[in-house]
Image 1 (cartoon, helix red, strand yellow):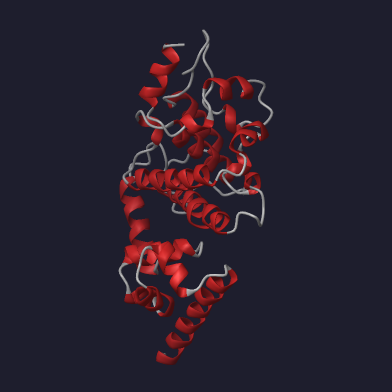
Image 2 (tube, one colour):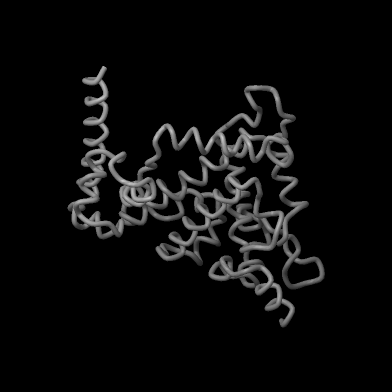
Length: 267
């Protein structure tokens, strides 16, 4: 039994070591990126349980890995179950699916691209793959923008774990876009919106997307008598993409919504 655990631990260490070497990083270089000491990095690389959870997350992020122990994953699942127990806007399973998608974008897809941006263009990396090509003309290969999107994904995950979604209160426009894109990924991947337990009244993903439009803080916020729909950037081929980008450039998507609306009112 002990031998089995040792073999598993060695296999996991080899995976972390292989990933670091694939990225061309020394232990010192990886430690700098994680803002930890070289000795701390070495301990984590051998056994993540020998460092604090927050330190392990920082180290794993450098390698584009999701470093969470089974205990941490179970705790997060229990938290989501409790927060969404009423089955209101989302069921617990739906919240878990969205958290998994957003965490994967931030800690795997975007994190890996930031470490090696030359391996593939940003427009192929989720969630940017859901943006209209004209949006990507503006963003191009901007690493600062990609990093800001990763941080926004983590912020939304924290909201979901508290039992809320960005559509309920004023906030950055990017939050609504990322939630909408996450639902579209769930649809694209064919992930069931139904709870296995049958305890909760489910909504189809398409119904949740429709509810986003009704509850969106940003829906109609823009110049012109009819305004602009919130999900235009993640609606490839939409005829108003260029109009929205002129009124709401991507670098404003991280500003507080009240500030943006004031700017529009001054036009």
